[in-house]
Length: 196
Figure 1 (cartoon, rainbow, N blue to C red):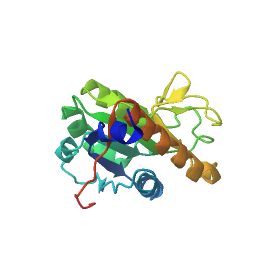
Figure 2: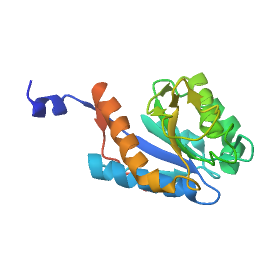
Figure 3: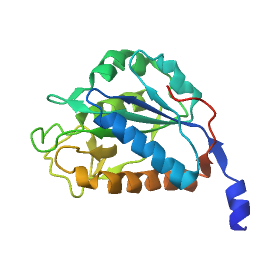
Figure 4: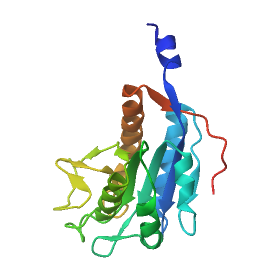
């Protein structure tokens, strides 16, 4: 089969980014991810702030990218904390879900990225299939609810202590997520929804 025919055979999936951000780091990460997806796949992925959002909007998408920072000692960012019960009530059966988060791996080394782990557990409990795990190599943390084996459940970023690695990590993670879609015979569909 030709490369063109192989590409044509892939099933398009709609993707949306849903993010909660207090100080702006996770929103910055979401915007970097959206730009990198556009560079790599030529697709503009809509971005939604979850504060006050009806989370049933997630159900319009096949691939859901969720951004949440970890606050204090292993807590969800405030918007996600307020939305957590609503998130757990969603039926995510058949959905692909991936995560990215910001945190401080030095001063909160044993709870770094706990928030994406909490959300990942809830998503799986609601029937989602997780993709986009990211290796823990190069990080300084000592423990995390967001870690399974030698991988985080999504992209782990630290704007305090490893900000110089952010762009490289975003590029690598986006390529990984797109590669996992390709392996499953999927590709990103062109979205027409406006970002909120």
